[in-house]
Length: 263
Image 1 (cartoon, rainbow, N blue to C red):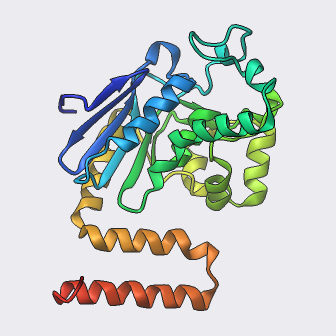
Image 2 (tube, rainbow, N blue to C red; image 1 turned 45 degrees about the horizontal axis):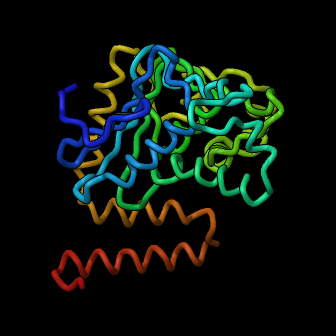
């Protein structure tokens, strides 16, 4: 991978941009890229820092694990340095707690913006918040050693970092429930067979597979990709006739644009 000057490099997150492709890298392999509020703020900042030229965003991680999930220091009485512990947050008002969780979720929401296609490159463990971060992306390519697990329920919590909606959409309610309440590992082969991942490759081929996928994404005209993504994102919320109408409207915009008649 080419070395580029980082647009952002802080709190375990590095953002680099190479023309139409941005790469967000988790950079704390010594702690298996465990997540913290500071990391979540850096991820949200990375989303805001994307130049308008970016069409594809790759999310990757240094080391053997994509992300081992929430750093358990969050539950220690002292919490993180200059951060309230989760125990302190629990003592706050309902409004304060809701606002704090909403702020944390911002790190996970921008990956599905209509103007970009995001691809997570997952190796090793993607547990809890790590699983949810991979689910935040549009697509996932996994190494053959990838292992997903949603451990929140086993800890007396729930997955609250936007992972439940895409998980149900990808694998269905029953399997999503079983994955969450058992906390079991989903291996690479099952991830592909159930639709969690698009492709599984040997670990040493992961970066190459992601490069090939992003190149294919960039080969299509940007506006056509944006319209297609919007159609697919809204499909489950529309009935059949409404989706037909949305297709007609999107195609009319594309035809007028190709004919030089667009706004």
